[in-house]
Image (cartoon, rainbow, N blue to C red; front, top):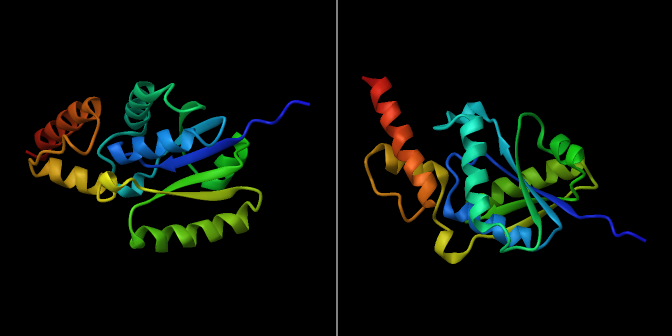
Length: 174
């Protein structure tokens, strides 16, 4: 008998992908046979990068850690209801990272709603590693827009892309 592959979904906006995201991706990849990193369109958050740019950034960063976990890692953009995307993938779990108590409050509510909408899809929480607990994409963008150094918060390739995106914004703001 062939054992079915366990597929998990790690969703997020990834605008930009941070070292904290990459840590969760690596750790989650050790728990399942296939991890799909779902990059949400989420235009309401006013992203720094387009969906296609974010997918490309995450794909590049995932390639750098490929083989360190035990699963296949895929990156895919999506727009729509998270649990519907999880069902389309055949995911048995939605992976979520938690940094602080404020994350828990929000994620607890989302897990409850998702469980009601898709009872066969579990939500699995991974605590952020101590060195990444304070990193958020929102803070990275804010610091970068104000000219601060974000090099310790994001991978090198993403850092170059942030600098280019911020420069692009400055040109359009003039």
